[in-house]
Image 1 (cartoon, one colour):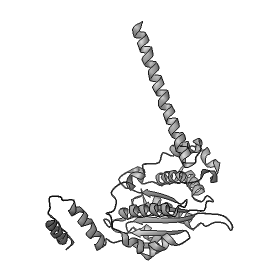
Image 2: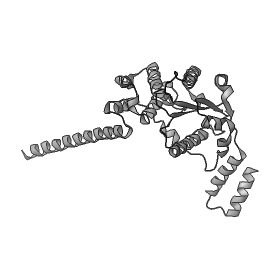
Image 3: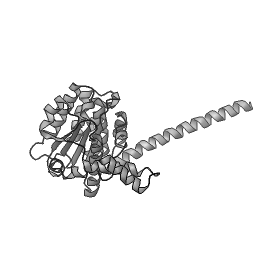
Image 4: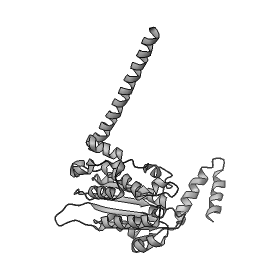
Length: 289
């Protein structure tokens, strides 16, 4: 009898723990929804997108402090950043020139820019990676960018019909429609979109479709008297024929800069704590040559 009661008591405790755990999950959903102004239905939609861990690539190695400052003084980049109209820019460079570091640098710069301006602007991004299928497809990039947009968009300005479907089973074409409705929502803001390593998409057809449709979004404009966002699109890639054909006239050539190389080498050598300051200086001089 005692064992039976003990067993029942343990089961009851297990049920209580499960209920509490479920309650905490519900509270988390509500908290997330309130934080970004989404209803519970909209928050569930965002979770149902099942976007890959797009943020992990941004959290990886950052550019050495002080590098890439020249980029902010480049005429093409300055125009892309400052002109009050939608525009596109491509950064093209051979392997090892630092394209992904550049993407992270630009994203950090945009974060600071938006924080200082205190405007309701948004940043969305995606890093393609040819060693992992989930970072190669259009469906993955759309799921990721829709999720990012929902986190920074006033949900009251969006069509409620967007949230009627099940995003986990949405087709690629369906995701394009949702993405377009959100990114073109009548909200006066600038949306910065950074797509890194276009050459690492799953195939040439994927690249062509993605580039064409993203450029169409940027160039789409709005009807007279309509409020529309400004879209700033930045893409990076290795020199690839089909990408060059589509983006050649808006491409900035990226090459490693001696001043950046010097900073990186000094940073690495300074980490060698067993070296004397004089030896570190000699090593830096030898490596820079």
